[in-house]
Length: 107
Image (cartoon, rainbow, N blue to C red):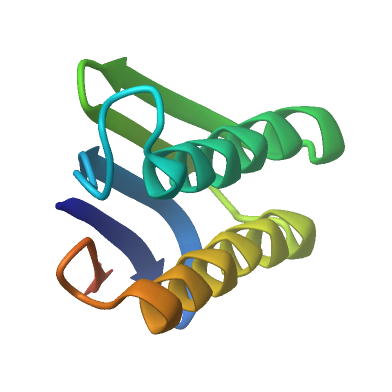
């Protein structure tokens, strides 16, 4: 199962962590893993290329974590909200057997 966690502070998104595998299909043919990976990697690349936000990234086996350091730009927040939207649509279509989404408010 894929677990996606979004980090928020005062209703502003500043990062995410995605772990696990959907196990919807055989490795290399799993459209859910491919979709989630594409959304997550595109979000990280977009934050880097389209904003001035500084961020730290952790990319280990089965984990992608991105956290913006300092003030989050409107564009950075929008990109993270867009990732949330994409993942929520996958969840709506395929259910919590394959993906779960969590939100962590950080003070």
